[in-house]
Length: 184
Image (tube, rainbow, N blue to C red; front, side):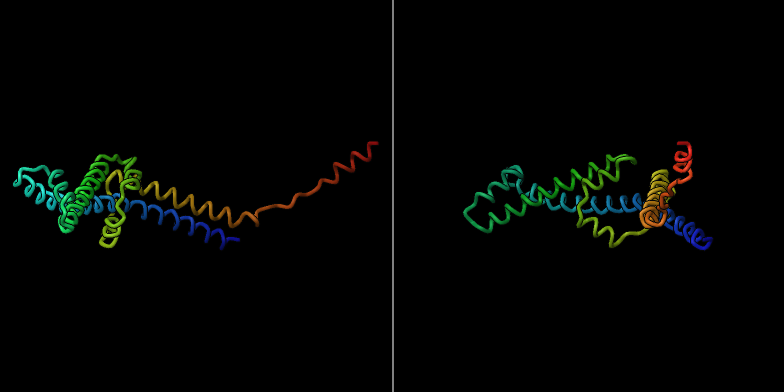
């Protein structure tokens, strides 16, 4: 049984280490995601500013400018109004998400991230992700959480797998029954 106990100890530590390393990368990913999100936000703002200036040159607000396009009899102008309207919606979504993520604390950052994530930006971040060694309190907090999570998952899997083998058959205690019969 010693080789199995040795293997169990090794697997236990590997699971804990993998959990620590994996979760400790969240702050790094979060920072890179936030930079990428900020880039998308800046670009949307730049494009929107072009339309705002065009509207101002005509003495209109952006909303009025969009309505002029949408209410036009020309399909081309209606189409461009829809594009500007979609750009404004996208800018507002990005801005809301960026503001929420910027205001998140160490403790709720992962939850806010899950609520606000833009999966296309997250995929782009993942494709260019640069792992790092956590040296901040946040990184170490996530590493410790990952260590406990990795170890907990391993312990749960081990318990599920070994459960059928750990069941001991119930033994009947005949000596107790015999002493009862002998007293009658």
